[in-house]
Image (cartoon, rainbow, N blue to C red):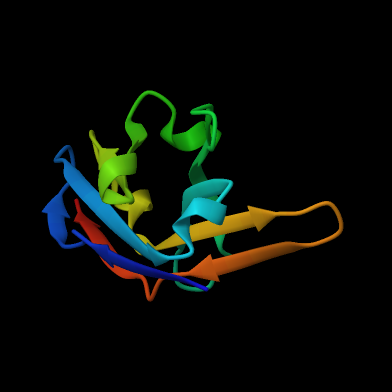
Length: 119
């Protein structure tokens, strides 16, 4: 089992910055991928950024150059640095941890943290 706790979401003006944190506990050694997803009202949840066990990162096109995902392995924490925020970034942001096995995958989710960007 893996437990995820997000923090850092708040109201910010357009052009501002925020850093989200996700602290993982439990069977963290088994985690292969960690990432941030978001869901805006009336929309499907979408991947924002992921970081692989080996350190490779991937971003959705709309945040490239503005958001950076990173991790502190010693603290079992993943961060999402968000710069140049836009109103369309407003959403509930969820932390995700994924365990990949030969024949199955397992996903764990945090409770979400609200990011609101005002224009």
